[in-house]
Length: 334
Length: 91
Image (cartoon, rainbow over the protein chains, first blue to last red):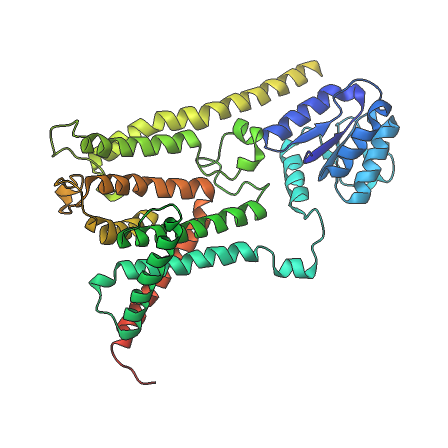
């Protein structure tokens, strides 16, 4: 089901198309009756979509103020508390049928204000949560995260225990932790007939608790910030066309392509060297981030920037040029 | 932080895994660290980059880093309690 339902008069098809294009480019899914036939033919679908949408934008124009359907859809949306009315400049507040004429109504060209109104509307909970639900909201994911934190801290403490002079309780903890985790992994891999060395038990334990931490935060974030872009727009936000493609990925911090490039650039050197393809062992090979020498860093950035530009900037330029083009077309048509 | 934690675990554990042949790891030679098994060293290097990658693809960096700070605080607390308890303080 779509996030936003657009209610409009069939005579304003171009206006609805432009608005839906803008909203979809922002990453929301939009439903509007694209058919040019009578609305009565699609009554069931319209009612279903109207009920499911979390925000309803009603476009008041000189045509729609006389439309019974637009009035009915706006009335239903207002009753559900999800109406966002917009109007064309030629329509005065007095022209809009009551009670909608008393509502604050944005100009249809004010895309920033419409975006803000939609964000505010979608941030409201779809269903009023119960007191119990509020108390336990996200608790299981936080619990998972804290299991990861506690287990990870103990695993790291055990890993560095050889460099410490341990107190009695710490020696017991380290000893038992080693035995428990090894026994657990032995039991788990025993099903597959694989014998795990004690060294691998510590590594697997660290991976397990790290995964718990990550999974807990991933689900917690998805649950809380599904519709809100929370990362700086300039660098780490996925391009608009990609967010429009899938709103589920709107939280993505950096595009897949750039991240893959980062990893490949930094991984291939040790790989090449470990395969002994390079005869010299004195090449400045960055294995760890802090081993990046100034020369390597500049080379690294020189390789990264073109990809970052292609990946982030070009789609955005295309997107804004389309918007500008649509605006100029609209102006010239007006 | 994930990288640092990974190397703490890898250097303390994986470095001791023996190779079936006489070969030893060469990647960290110039840093004065020698893995006994080159394949294990290779896995450790790949995971060094793979773990942050997986974490960032799954969850936002801000949330992950905030909770990794808690993990660091937990580790420091364990070390601190270990040192304090050796003083045999009577409360």
